[in-house]
Image (tube, rainbow, N blue to C red; front, side, top):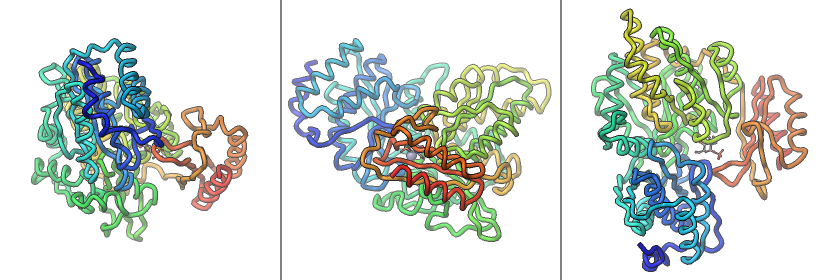
Length: 528
Ligand code: NG1
Ligand code: ZN
């Protein structure tokens, strides 16, 4: 296989524009869709190498820019068990994305191949999917051009939610194995979730979901079709066939950031609503009270709900388990206090980006992780599931608790945060507890907070430590932030460079709304 010759016919069509620089960040590559062609092409080649390196296991490529505007797009790689690409490979992606001649590309590819001792004769396998953006099909085609350079066997699943692609990667790689993850098809995904849901609840449930005009809408409806009579969903903002509407005035990110209702929802007091983001890996919930006041139930609320419920049934099951919760600095301070003090659970804080949370959560028997923005899941360790299955219950209550834990582990996507799966999990818990949204909300009260975005000349000078809670550079800035924070009751604020946008984020929380806004303004002023 002569890579250089292989590239001769295709490279010129996928050459990098000279002026652009790319970086594999928190969520892979993400930028304006019309600048991404060369990037997805080399990602196709890199995915092939990754598959060969891992003895021909299937690798996933997802084309999506999640909650970002319609004109953006992005690409990320999914590893064999459905996790995010191993961190040590991100640098290869960045290097390849920035070469600007065919010769350089060959040199860099050969460097990777010899450094990792990759056998090019191993058959490589990759699956590809995309969200509903209109730039998607062309970018998939360019990815495929990259896959063909190394004769990779591929399957294009067209439009899927991001978590569905993660599911498929794991299902394909565990096919016929004792730890089979499920049927490796889209319908296998629905069957797995629907089967678990039916084992957990029997009373009919209905909910209205804002799908951000993204791919989550039709996929949620497909899921609900497997649960007729049990789950009835009304989807608003379901114009996924109109890519210009994607994430506009709708979706989980809009609701969380603006702390208000999306377009298209006129809430009935104390009814529960949910918003997905554009690729349906995030979900947030909310309700309105009888005064019409909006109440957000974000990732922290989901995390505490699930953690409390699971630790409760673990106790009922009569077995021991090490349960922990993983958060980022964006978690509301009240949620952290609630987890530590009321639930007495260990809480770990990691840098932003689910890959960090995921790895920490995997260290527990049951690891609950959510970003405040609603991206997260619950990981059940294989050894813990084994214990659940092999334990002989001594009472009907114990038996029920064991059964519930097993079904929850099937219901909750083990590969990555999944809006559809998390929605079902929350509905199960609320139904079993017979809670309305205000009972859920009552567990703790969020500290008023504000997330601001500041455009700066160079965001790379903002360097952090302590899971991004403190700045080490620019020098002196952290001291000024500390001095501001001190002035406010229960004040907390931190600054970090975004990994997905060319901006710096400023988070602030404090005892009252006015204080939170003031603190935010002060720190924004310091950063500018
Ligand atoms: P950045 O842009 O690095 O803050 C954002 C989210 C992350 C994560 C990624 C990937 C916030 C504050 N940040 O990252 O949590 O979800 O996008 O989508 O919500
Ligand atoms: Zn997303």
